[in-house]
Amino acid sequence: MSRFKEIEYQCPYCGKQFTIHAYESVNAQEDPDLRDLCLSGDIFRHSCPHCHTDFMIQYPLVYMDPRHKFVIWLNQNEAGRDMHAFSMPLVKQGYTLRRCATLKEFTEKIQILEDGVSDVAVELAKYDSFIEFIDNRKGKPEDVTSVEYQNTNDGVMKINIRTDDKGMAFLIPMAMLEEEIRAEHEIFEVHDEDFPLVNSDWIISLFMDSSGQA
Ligand SMILES: [Zn+2]
Image 1 (cartoon, rainbow, N blue to C red):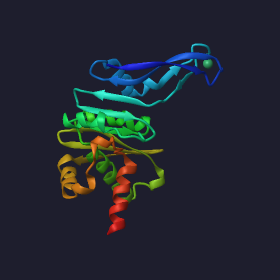
Image 2: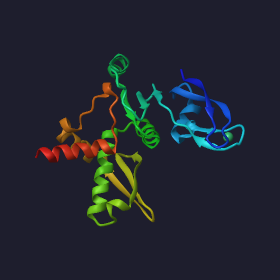
Image 3: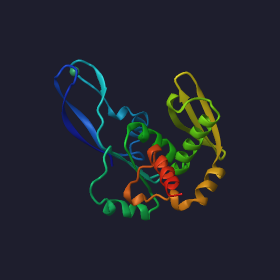
């Protein structure tokens, strides 16, 4: 069941008060309309009924998808408490559990996990694509504005790298990524019960750690 609470909110533009429906949890299977709003990020878009200005108000949200067996907890901050009472039963049922720190990570994560693809493989593919982009002198690291997962078809993952004036797609076979992960599985291991972040900062930290120890 999806749940929301009503919050009194002061419009940052006209200063008047109004009530917003802030979702605390969304069940994608029961509420496909809310799933669509999460995927687009529009669930956090609100409109002031007084001055009619649109703006984003972001708050923590738990997103559950029983059909694809994953839970994403959108929260900038760590729990600061033990989540195991909530997470362990889900882990036992084979759920993937993740925390996302930003809305951009959240919308991309929904897409990845609906595709049934390992997000560890996605982050590795994004990292490899970025390195290849730089090594082949297609651009400088500071020119890259985004590295995004696009899709996975017939065992091939597509990653897009964008700069201000151009974009470039990288096609990476899943088998290659899986092989790379298998070879160093202890490095890539994640613990679902802790709602880990699996994002670009995470993958960079893995490579920094392993090169630091070498
Ligand atoms: Zn207003």
